[in-house]
Amino acid sequence: MKADDRAHVFHSWSAQAVIDPLAVAGAEGSWFWDYDGNRYLDFSSQLVNTNVGHQHPKVVAAIQEQAGKLCTFAPAFAIDVRSEAARLIAGRTPGDLDKIFFTNGGAEAVENAVRMARLHTGRPKVLSAYRSYHGATAAAINLTGDPRRWPSDTASAGVVHFWGPHLYRSSFHATTEAEECERALAHLEQLIAFEGPQTVAAIVLETIVGTAGVLVPPPGYLAGVREICDRHGIVFVLDEVMAGFGRTGEWFAADHWDVVPDLMTFAKGVNSGYVPLGGVAISGRIAETFAHRPYPGGLTYSGHPLACASAVATINAMEEEGVVENARRIGETVLGPGLRALADRHACIGDVRGTGVFWALELVRDRETREPLVPYNAAGEANRPMADLAAACKRRGLWPFVNMNRLHVVPPCTVTEEEAKEGLRILDEALSEAVPQ
Ligand code: PMP
Image (cartoon, rainbow, N blue to C red; front, side):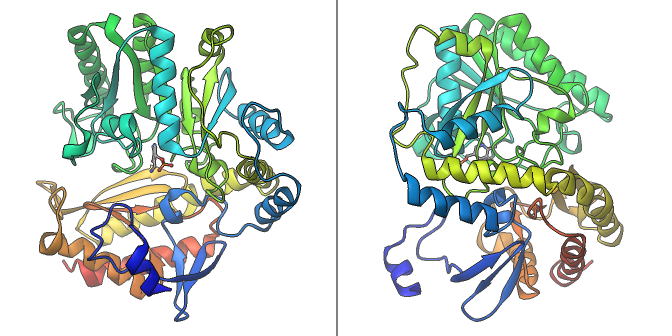
């Protein structure tokens, strides 16, 4: 099996000759295991998507049942599980985001949100934040603003980046959240003035930035962006692909601030990734644009029956089992206090950020200067402390999510108190071993 993988699978985000993927034998709840009998507590939720944990029996059963009834049917037809999934999603999205366009994942959701915004406004440009991740397809990778750029991805016209708020590494020399918020909004306003508001179709933002560091916006920021969009006729797109469906302790991160975007992208947690699914939740105003004029976009597998059946089962299970409440409670009572306690014990932890089961530890060489523990894009020897930390976690049976100089703490929303505490205990030991003070 491993030999076939090495010979024939071309892996994402990897140098093919260098990687040595773990051979997974099975998974259940917050755990998975390999063929050598090693068990891992999944503090990554894979790619932050298994919000209801692995192999949730109700979701597995729903997929099996749907497979027996109807495996595939084109998007133009009304299918019971498709309409039910759309109704359940629309019933939880904020405001009047009541129509659902289904995709196969997050990047396609972002691609379509951008097209809808351009068609709705007739304007070409899209603004997105540095320190963001929106996917690895044409427009989505260009919107993505992390400090990696590739020669393949310079061709998308009309994407302009701005600095979002991030007090720990403020681009605005701010020292308080209020200052950071005010200056980040003024910066965005100025950027729009220079780009020409009449040319800007959309602002695309992750509600809470995920991959680029779990950056929680200061109070007032998202409301401020909403107001800027309204004043200039710009479509406000919130990307909730990672933050949505319980991860932050609310159904959607936007619920923390009562902000309603015009379009909202989702994927991952909608069905915990059991079958590929994503989508765009569309406000009444934007849906109206396409009431009598066709939306010129679609995907063969849009609203795939197996994916929709798994979404229906996932959302129902989340309601029945209080999964969103569990994520909030674990964040408030175990992860938040536990990670702050780790920061008291380990000088390499410069910042602790997050909410629910969505946290990051930012690791530094020096708390005063905030110099990152490893430089951005570090590889090989330069990345040694982070690689050592990941290895120390794995040796102790914890599967971590490590990105640049950060350790993201993102277990399933169903994680138990005991599992969360066990994870914190392992992190404590791994930090002591890999980054000695
Ligand atoms: N948006 C955000 C905020 C994401 O975190 C991701 C995936 N990490 C995507 C979009 C892209 O989703 P996918 O990988 O399903 O295409």
